[in-house]
Length: 154
Image 1 (tube, rainbow, N blue to C red):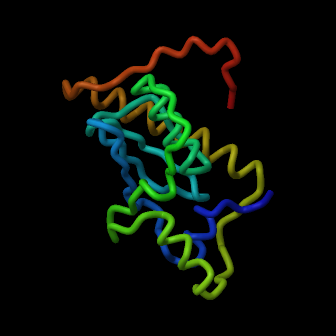
Image 2: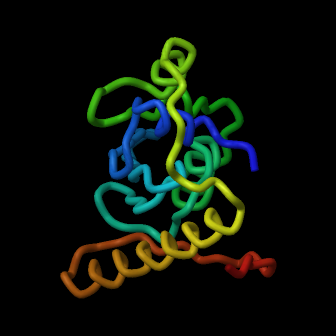
């Protein structure tokens, strides 16, 4: 399995597991965390958990947030220029440019397909827990109706 840019950024230490990332689209703010294997999870919209999780790329995450939560279909949204690493305030374009200058560090995380599939399952379950805890605490949250008949099963 080839590694993604997010995995490479983790490997060289530009970002770390648990780091917050965010972007704005019109009046809405979307946030998430970088998790093991370079996945994006623990997604929120305007501070409330949503039923979206386990993205492999920034583009997938941004496109899904905009299309599924805001119900808009944009074609010229550059996620790499708009998503910011909250801890540093840098865009992912800036972080990616640092990959060329950074020394290669051997990764201790497994990048095999089975491990990635299991991480995605765990992330989906963690996202469900966030939603349930949000309901218990009375926090408003966004639910997305999924009318897609081709639901992937983990």
